[in-house]
Image 1 (cartoon, helix red, strand yellow):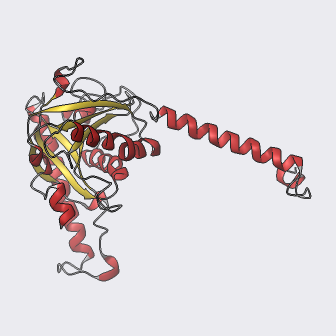
Image 2 (cartoon, helix red, strand yellow):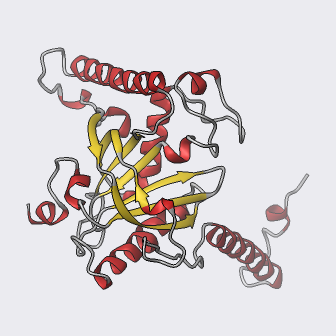
Length: 289
């Protein structure tokens, strides 16, 4: 059976049939792009709130806590992949349907995403640099698990820490194996250190602090990644400058996202900004180095 392209093979390039085909395909592609862009919130009006705002609530206080994280130096679009690595390292099933909770999640003290204490309050990313001041692929972010003082399961807390820190041993063994067990590089066999799977976990503490807060739609797709870098983070930086927030030129922005709720919550500390760099150079020091 002949397909459409074979039937129109002998038609000239500018024939009405070819033009019609081009118009239809282009229209479909543009429609899909517009749909996904709108679904990701490209036209969403994002309100940044503080404790002095008319709509302020308890979310304007960032609880902080112990943070087990991977420090990455990449484009911010890679932050979602880093958190997926963290979930895989915990042994979580990323294929679960909405609202499901596995035995392992219960054992770790993690309730299904969307419930109190669930993923939306567990997996965080700390964005340290301004993409406008740092060359592409050189921005720093820390992605991992935040265990606040109010975390509801002491046993789960210890199991989460144990599982993630045990991954470090596997990473070190893999690096030693690929370098010939002697610590030296073997050239082509070196581990790709900038992949999140090959980056070791660190342990730090994020402070309890008053924050500016905003929410934005989230699809866990390419448009969400682009909007995060080119709409959301710049909006917080503009707000910081206009309101003379501490470290207004390079404020830290923190995010936690829920694929089920299709929403991200973003925080910007109003003070104690330096503590959110987790002992690393501040954004100003990093740019100057």
